[in-house]
Length: 132
Image (cartoon, rainbow, N blue to C red; front, side, top):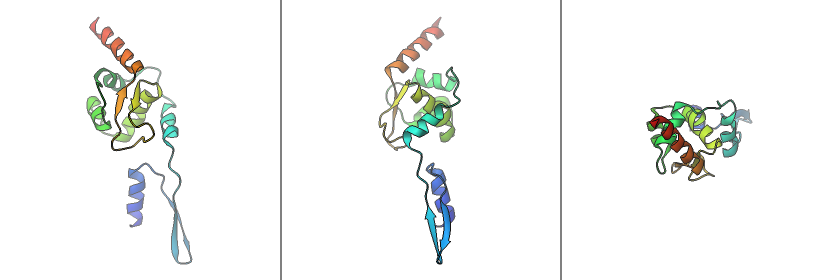
């Protein structure tokens, strides 16, 4: 695997880029530990607004049953996974409005998201306001 492939892999999988040094004619790569799941979700909470965005409200109003990341992105018309996670999804998780079906594996390919009881109550309240 070439250097560019390693850097691309790290970038695609949200891992920090490795550092490397030459020692006795060999190259030694050192990979930094990945940010833990809870740290990553908590980091997304910093600087969030007090009110929900229109994309967050759209998810709460239309998320019936378990939905994958791509399905949630389609509900909002968003295409950038990273921005979607940090700007839309993680704040909903932090507020307890949405929960993961596999909480200990944040980026599992089988990961789904669903409304919590608090999220369902919020969605109902938003729907009632819209019908007035």
